[in-house]
View 1 (cartoon, one colour):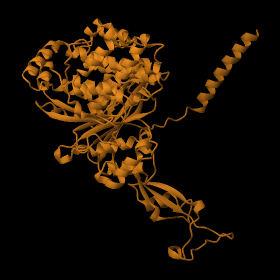
View 2 (view 1 turned 60 degrees about the vertical axis):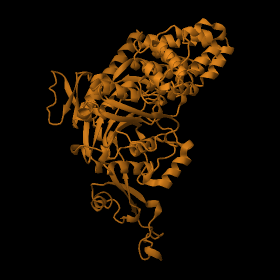
View 3 (view 1 turned 90 degrees about the vertical axis):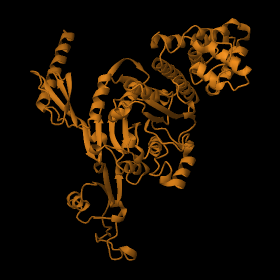
View 4 (view 1 turned 30 degrees about the horizontal axis):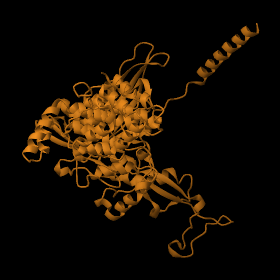
Length: 611
């Protein structure tokens, strides 16, 4: 069964629930039952062997758990004689038997169903007389990994969650990230490490502090298996939403991961891995979500521990906590002397430039740039996420930059690399194809500067495109066509994003126009500043302030001076400015001729109507 057919089958359970359940509550039934049937199918081939082993070890008076795990061939087991098929043989006792079956799972699985609050749904279904019908529906489908692999199952969970989120007016994007975005991020994480990762027996750790349903961890694991099935990726994560956490934990169980590494709770206020450092990290924190609920804990850590805690560089405004997650990941980087780390994080546009010099956001940008931690920032196409159409960016940070990257940041404008989806999913209307992902990965991996050459026909329609690396010749346009070039990848020094904000003062004058001098303190005998004429100027770090002041200010205000005590250093990354291409307006004669033609056509149409 393909993914679409499976999603439709599982969604059809909603027909049974309709009337007794609100649409927004369908997921409370369908998601845990899907997980239950998946686990049931995974254990079915070894069921008899596990029960026989249980009887043997009980007779010997031994702790059966390690033996049961070995017989099950999984990191979980079930000791009940029942399964989803046999549960259907006793309709009158379906609720009691289902409870018994759930309690016979190993502790990690029982925790999953507690997070789903499954017992409350079993009670509710039983009282509505629907429990047997729902259980019977799920018993009909085979969800063993031989029939539905882990990738398919993950996509099915994401599709179901997206639908349920839309019905309840929740933001689906808080729970998971589109798979092609994850594939791009995973490629960027591993592309420079292929030699290391291809060694037999290599073990690396990966962490996602906003794990959702575990999609990022899963895709990273799939990538490593494809490139080196002898390598091992140990996965860690934390998730706040109980249903997403339950699905993530179930997925990790089936993959044989240590599920004690997946922690439930709020990453910002209650770090689930306080002493851990990781080789790789990935995250898609919620965009533009305020952090007021955890403000007390975050501020306390910032003030008490400073740079010994997670939030030393500064705190962003309470209305957007994205940069808190970035700092959290910085604190989880393995020291460079121990091999270092690389991580990718998806952010919206505001962390690039929000906040003036001296603000929390500016100080965080200053920290990562001055310490040479930013490898690249990649602009994604708009309309890529399920809950928003805004511009998004992947930041790649590392404390083990190769020599040729040191002191520099690569900016890649990937906003044109997309294809239209056949059917929109929420706000998601575009997707990146394999070729798009490969192009961006090649630009990043090769640390290239490049231009995008678009071949346009006489009407201005794009008929082809080429990536032109610096030093290469652009393509030659066919007859009656033209080539339009735009920057695609740029490499800039870290200092290019820094600036000084200077305060420009002008003298206060009395009614007669005379300059008012100060009478006491440090301004005694000096012109008093007129606050109504006060202004600020932004001077790039690479430019001398005095030179700038003489060129840009004094010709317009000869009596102005700089108040050096108010000078602040700030950092911003005006991404779009570095990729802006000026397009001159069309010649006025051409526009006039076009208007004349349109006017003539309208007049001819009116003449025909009047005739």
